[in-house]
Image 1: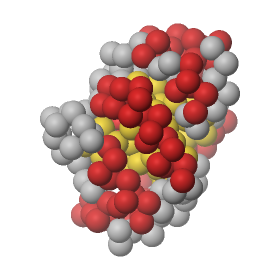
Image 2: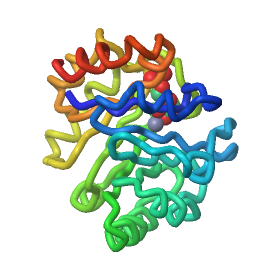
Image 3: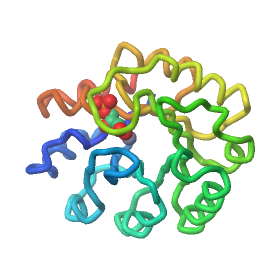
Image 4: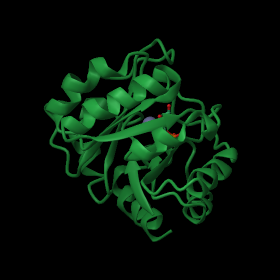
Length: 211
Ligand code: DX5
Ligand code: ZN
């Protein structure tokens, strides 16, 4: 399994040290919250522009109007941007995929913890580079894993989706194997990594990568 730690619960007063402590991860996940789609507000690209990320980054936009963040995260150099079908609906999602792809950014679509995979049409599945299955309700770290997400992954694979499936929310070393077996490629892990001492994180990242 690949792992993308989320820095949502990192200590932003020493963020460079924090990202250096997760340098063996496959990718770093940036959770952007606008205070509208979700009540919390997290951070913007400018808040991390001075950070030297040791591995590639991706942005997860939990935001009513995701497109207004595309320029700043392109400038930051993310490899992928994921937005929510709950925010855009299908037609706008397809337009935004085109926009992201023309920028050379991988286009991801997310279903929130309470959304069924049927909310993604076959056309969305054909055009998306990545599907992010949330296994909590978007909005904050440290929530418990919703096991329904396992069936959602299987459904998406059985419908023929061959792109990347990423799972986000409540992931730990107890559920990662089930996610791998269901067909997930990469897990986002927030509190399970960032709430432990920096010097122990690389070992835990290695455990996920073995799963
Ligand atoms: C939740 C975010 C997640 C979250 C993951 O709204 O999208 O990325 O930070 O954190 P944990 O692993 O603590 O659920
Ligand atoms: Zn996320």
